[in-house]
Image 1: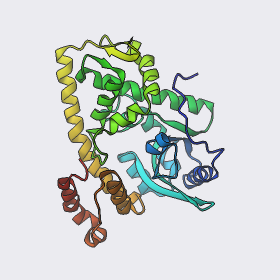
Image 2 (image 1 turned 45 degrees about the vertical axis):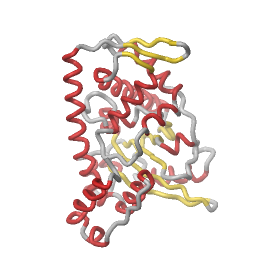
Image 3 (image 1 turned 180 degrees about the vertical axis):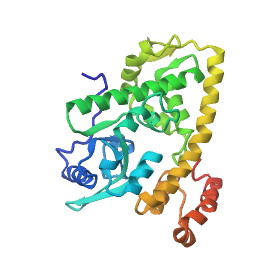
Image 4 (image 1 turned 120 degrees about the vertical axis):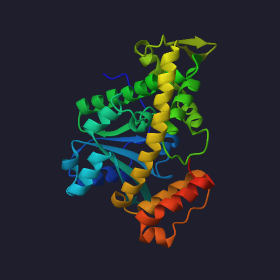
Length: 312
C-alpha cells in the first residue's frame, strides 16, 4: 500500500459529464492511457465546472497515443503536449486543459533525474487519480507523486531557512518552482495553495523527513508542525546556483512550449489569452496579424504583455 495521502475530489463514477470526458480522452488516444490525474484550482475548489480542469494523461508511449507521427515527435522532444477538450451534458459544459506525457517521462519528471521542476514542482501539490488501468498502475502513480514531493523538498531545503513552520517551508519551496516558469498567477499563489492543503503537506513532510538528509527533523511547536535542518555553506551556494539556472532555462522552455502549443493546441492563442486574463485581471486581445502569422509576430506581442506585467 502507498503512503500517499487521500485527496478528496470529483469521481467519474458519480459525475456523468466527467465520465464522458474521460471516455472521450481514452478513445482519442487509442486506449493507450494508463492513468488520468487531476490537480489545480478545480480540485481545490471542488467545482469542476468553473474554469478548466487540469488533467494529466499518462500514456504507455507517444507512438501508441497518437496516429500522427508529428504529434508523437513533439511530445517526445519536449514533453508534455497540451490540448483542449470539452463535453456538454445536461446543459453544462465541462472544459479541460489536457496534458499528455508518457509513463517513462512522468516517472523521470517526478524524480531528481529531471533538473527542471516542471513536473516535480507541479505534482508536489495535492493530486487526485481519476483513473488508473489497474491497482498496480495506481500504486505506481502514488509512489511517483510522493517522489515528486520529495524531489522538491530535497532541491529546496538548502536555500530555505534552517528552521520554521512546515507550511512556510512548502510556501517557499513551491514559490521557487513557480519562479522557473512564465507565470500569470497573482503573487501569493503558493501561500494560498499550501494553506488550503495544510494536512496534506503535514502528512507528506512527516513521510519524507527521515530520508531527506540535511539533518532535517519535524516537531510540534505549540500545535504548529515545524522543522529544523542543517545545511553546509557550500551546499547552499551550489543549490542557489542550480535554482538560478532553472529560472533561466525554465522561462526559455516556457516560451518554447507556448510556440509548440500553437501547433498542438486547437484554439491555442485563445486559450493563452483566456488564461492571461483570468489570472492577471488584464484585458488581452490577440491582434489579427498575430493570428495570421504567429511565428513572426507573437514575439513582440508577448514581450509587450510581459512589460505590462501580465505574466512574469
